[in-house]
Image (cartoon, rainbow over all chains, first blue to last red; front, side, top):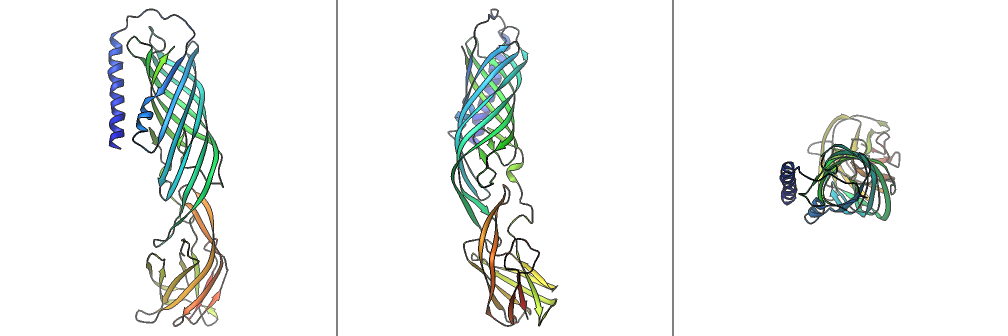
Length: 219
Length: 142
């Protein structure tokens, strides 16, 4: 856990340094239109994957469509386990998100720099296995039931609040965003509510907040 | 990174878990309140003293939820008196409840067996399945 926190704060600090430097150099050429694509990889969650049971790899492709509106497609893979309160479960699989971002405030010199808000829908198609679902007893008597491995799918609504900052004068950007999520529908195995959904997170509650810290390259 | 809001520690509301067995006391032919009665239950891992019940005509006993096909308990009515030993045989059926509770058990084909009498004279059967805690599943006749 400590390693994870240090790792996270390192990225937060790096973000501050970069954005601080960014403010000084505002002398750039006027941005010319060209077919645009930005491809990003979530380095924070990839890094955290080395220290935790949760392995999450995700990235995005976004493109400016018109004025302040950018389209975005995200894809990723997550492998996770849930061992708590007598549960023992695993889930893994790919997930996809599609949506749009709206630049709320942008740099006049570079319209890819700025803050945005947006909305996406997400879907996950995964394999799960519940080795134990607890049966809580009295006087130290407990037991559990298990479910065989199965394929399930879940869909959710996701918001995006974040910002993008160009790294010096390169084509690299840092994209940091928060993702409030609401689980809309999920398939269930024998009526059992899934405890984890790849791409969504811990799904015993329908609402949760995700966070990603990306390094992106603009073509 | 994930920040989970609440849900993870979903509590299991009481009454949603595995139902307890209802045992009612009789003297002769009719249900009667006992001045005092004490029950110990053998849960396999350890025996738990459920304490003295005063002026009660019935008691709720949590049964075992492990793989054992029976639960045994001891009953006495006087501090220094003898204990009766009762075995409850059953089969179980597991039912999923919620993320917080997990699953619960319902008991079927419930029957009692008096392994040691005095102070209990005999057993009479009640509702032979346990899905809630409303009806008597076993009568202890003193």
